Image 1 (cartoon, one colour):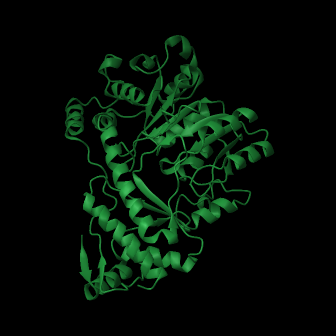
Image 2 (spheres, helix red, strand yellow):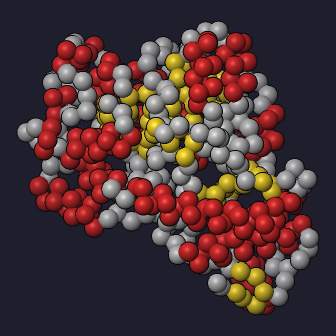
Length: 431
């Protein structure tokens, strides 16, 4: 555990504040300081590094520059993803944003159609809706950071022409998916799942992404699998899978070099009827992903153990000032990051002081409701909310987000707990 004197902390904090705009000054003689990088991504396993080097030595980085699907690194990766999630079909893409857009395109969205989604999600989700030609309508998110079922029912009733619901499992938190599916069925809406944050998360014993008609997962650097950028379109719907492969760039019969798409009878004349958006995953990305799939379960165990210890420590020490979002009964979580809600009694000024205190002690803590946060719906000027969202607005104003880098040591998470607790107490109790 790192401890530092008040004088040294004063110099650290004032220097940090002059560079980064923070003004917090330590309030006690000794305070915990974190010196490790919170944005440390998971490294690529040696097997993945070797696979990438081999591809570069041959120059065959284009997924279709092989004689058969069985020789394609990307096709093998797609098969391994379906083995893990239990889906029948999979198409690897250049990003999860592309996968989200294609969820809508392949499920029949027409230009100008309305799409319901969480008011609390990342800006990439409304961006995908806009990219697909849709118009976003936002559903309230509750204090557990998930879509509010009652508001979904209410808004689908108020928008009878809306026939698409794209639910986002933000930070791996899952709403009651049985009830969500029931509401979508009631209103005749297609349910699609953004599983960018929920790789490894289960709902009633099945991997997330099976309640909807199709789903998307991510391999962007801060997700459970890391290829820098990348995504996967997953479904059991043969027509959607065929359309996705064509949109992604399977032209002139190249679908035969896939292992996880339907047969040629499903493709028919799709390659001449649909545009080629060139959204394919490169073989390099697939090569670095494949060995990471093998270690998912053991990494999940490690993440969850650290999360459980960290949240218990926070609840025991400062539980009167915050709450931890609760898991929906029926889900098996993957806690690869920490979220908590500061109590409504904490003022806006105290929230900012808490954030400044954490930053001055080496721990960047994000406020979802900050005016610059891309997860705050007020910043989506390209797809603005037309109706008030009071529940989401209040939640975001107190909802905090902290990364949990896998490469940190267990002792670093003890330091994280101390910085969070000490910073909150320094603000709330002037200690």
